[in-house]
Image 1: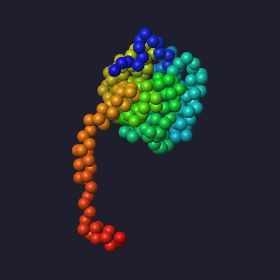
Image 2 (image 1 turned 45 degrees about the vertical axis):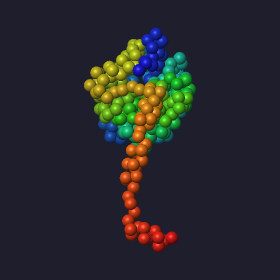
Image 3 (image 1 turned 120 degrees about the horizontal axis):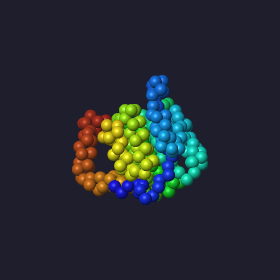
Image 4 (image 1 turned 120 degrees about the vertical axis):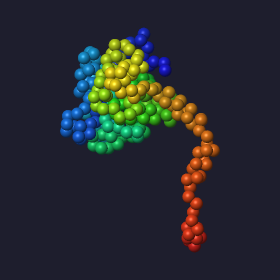
Length: 240
């Protein structure tokens, strides 16, 4: 994969954390946002941390809060870091409201367009790599991100905190994104951290569809259709 940030081009960024811990995590004061914020600031980078406990706050953090953070941090591109509980279809907020990938895509796409297609999104959630689905059905001019950094399994809080702290540290020191993701695996001991671009995700989906044997799919679907019973047919005939 061609790297996103060539070393000869200085990448000025700040980290915008949106954290939505579960009620249990909040009670035990368990989370990663504060840890990552400190790690980013130790690298002399700006970091904004927002707590979004429900959908209204989550949407406001992306539609209002991010704009305010960008105004306060001129000449820097935001990296959006979403920290929450997740699953294959999306994320769950503190309020237990679900934000599925289609809904998140709707929130991210205008931001990516405003950034001329240069948005990097970090999903610090379980199965966050499933977020690549946001780009699979998108046209290039409608991509929700340039790149997605996430885990394909169910990492622990210590693993995500260590991994993303290492990731931002290396980016701050002008390392390639792919190198930084490799280091995430080593630092955390979790081999399921990956990076993909929207273009790669879309192409993988198109390749998958092209290889489908539609005749086999049709036969399988037809085999799942139950043959109506004689009683059902008699009832249908009586009702006509």
